[in-house]
Image (cartoon, rainbow, N blue to C red; front, side):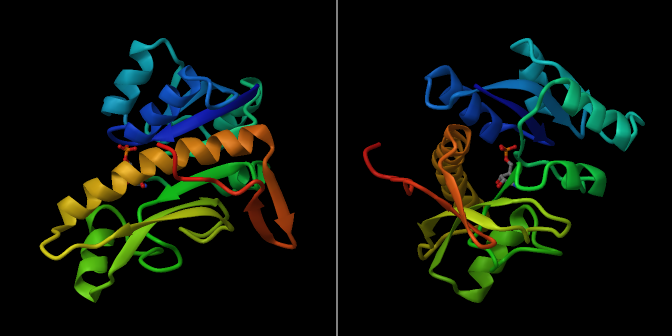
Length: 208
Ligand code: GRF
């Protein structure tokens, strides 16, 4: 059973999808800590409502060392970033290298990095006329949207899509992909080919 800490800033729908998959025994893990950048975000409220400990970082002045200590005290094996919008301190990136995952609502390396956040990602896809966008789950390194890619899933762009419509279609795919990737990581289904990670066996997104 792996111990997970989930970092959130907003609605927490990916957090809920992961929690649901744990409850359905699709992930051999347990959530030991939720870290929220905003005390009152809906994801933090939800975490409290189901009895999970919530730390606020960085808003309430706990230091990076304090947060790292909390992660270590909780026995956290993997950090799961799920819409967390603040930069992760380098000390924590270093301590959880290849053990911290992020989800990005586009197919990296396209439409990622500086300036690509929230609706700007989907507007960028539409403005460029891309026909396929999607979801990327990757390990976190010191740069935004840059670490090794673990898994991706495509989402078609349709005529008439707005950034909001596309965002919600991509979010549905996020809720399918992220719990599967977290489940695979908790099972140890990850191999490295040099610096490139692969899930082995590969994920099947069929058989819904
Ligand atoms: C998701 O689109 C995620 O990819 C992005 O932020 C959003 C978070 O949504 N990084 P939620 O809080 O999980 O609902």
